[in-house]
Length: 387
Image (tube, rainbow, N blue to C red; front, side, top):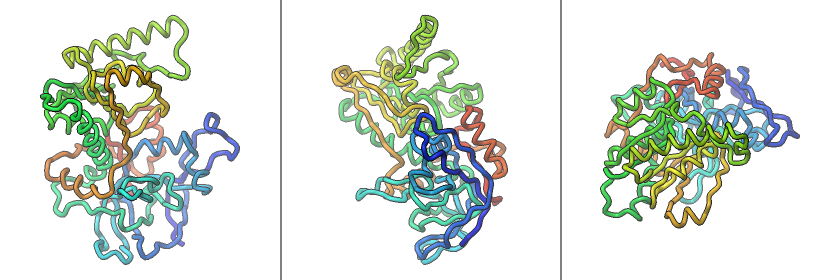
């Protein structure tokens, strides 16, 4: 057995349903796992990327991952970079190599993820630990002599996800809008690291691009990247729970005021046409506004949800308006090296402020800051080992 220092999530109450499950807490404690098998590498994480799936696991919504895996406790953290301590029998890895973790514990015949490492995949130990073991085929070395820093590479996951989602969404839009000048069409997103990466690709493809941000610092970052920033504080009451919509007159009026301001903004940015490709990774609370903002022949594309996974469509309207809905998850395993090489070759990689990286001792603070929306960076990272 190997014993390591880790942040551990324990299973919730066995009888709790999805509505009553209490949010879990990460506990700093010793964690043990079985020695690596021949095809597994023993590694030490250097930097981990804090992803929405960690928050989903902590909240135990939509699932209690511990109960799903039939394990009393798990170590989360499935995206980041590691240093090889023992490569096992791998012929392509050596001790000391620094690699990105590809989270494909189980994939289908076409290379797409079915079970994600260190989330719902059983017996996997994530990067919120001083040491762990990972199947060697899930380790992708960073480019030799890269001009980018390790923290920049540690934020790769949002870019890999964006590359895959944009490729599909753009192709879908093009099937109905062949021959159109992208410069006449708007790509818009609610905000977040994946959206930021995706809009950079859209901008390179010639589209108008804009996204929301809720702080002056983030608006300044968008301006630096040539993306039109839309201050979401201008429409503070835009969220709408489709299962419990507002009923009192004051709340209804507040929502309508915010929605009107949002749609006015979209009209101004799109010359009245609406959004051609809307990157909506927020989910249910903003979906009503998303659909209203769409152009005809537009695409609504998403890689998940942050605040609500059930959305509702008026199917007839979606058909009449020829809206295409794209839903993707992670990326394709066979594309891993291609995306990495595009990042290195084309400077499509995030800026990361080292001062904003959380230390391993401060993971609990990072969890709280993320859940409360207090993390300023689009790419929240935690440092496990000094490099």
